[in-house]
Length: 295
Ligand SMILES: Cc1cc2nc3c(=O)[nH]c(=O)nc-3n(C[C@H](O)[C@H](O)[C@H](O)COP(=O)(O)O)c2cc1C
Image (cartoon, rainbow, N blue to C red; front, top):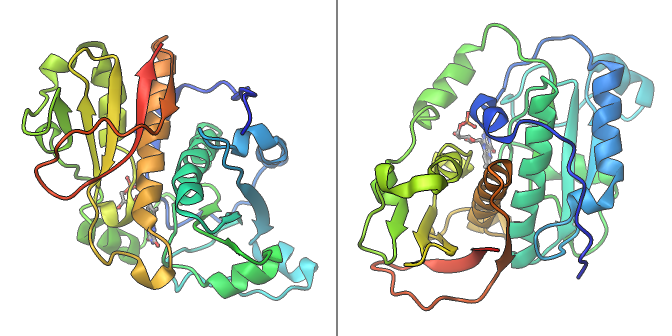
């Protein structure tokens, strides 16, 4: 495990989280050289792809624009089952197949997605709607490694397709669970109101508006009574993503951790992550995955 602190490129954290939404229809405009370079520089910095507990991800750029695909001689097809239209590239993640790596990937890939958003690029977390085989071929995946998720990249088309609007409607993509279902004050069973959150209001709101698989928002957070710690729990949907062989909802918790930490840092609130179970008694089955301790 490393103690090296990544130097994160500067971008407005909360404003970018508020701007991000899944983009499934892209303009045919190729990605500008400067935006491509910025992403490539990011991907080349290993510390930026390292999770809060040192878990290392690799992320590769895969060209997807028609011209680039023809030039590459690799064939046109990179499958997304028609979910994504006109992507100009993809970013595909690659990690060792372990529960911890999956959680940490959520954290690192969300930070990358936010960075891309801050450049004006559209993205969409994809964990199910892509053919893993076609991407595994592109990446020459090492044994024991998986591609947990990918994102398309490109500039947003001004008119979303009917399919895109239908997906948003079906997954209630513009809705989020209310505070009292997600956040607790000192103990489970004591819902935290937005008014009582004080300086943690913004970081918690950034967790709430984050993306999650099927928009299930499986994060449940409990503030310690002295408010020096925030405990992150996963309320699992049993059997969700079982076919994939890894728990996609752990990625959602990594995303929540990323949004929380970046929003805290922006407010000057520093802290670090640990995995000691606080021993709280949830009222329904839940997994404690990590905690943030303010310094
Ligand atoms: C881990 C993860 C996996 C996802 N997988 C897919 C997917 O396979 N296909 C898809 O269309 N959207 C996928 N999404 C996008 C979610 O449906 C979307 O984030 C959610 O509905 C909220 O909408 P928003 O991103 O526009 O805020 C995924 C999101 C996450 C976080």
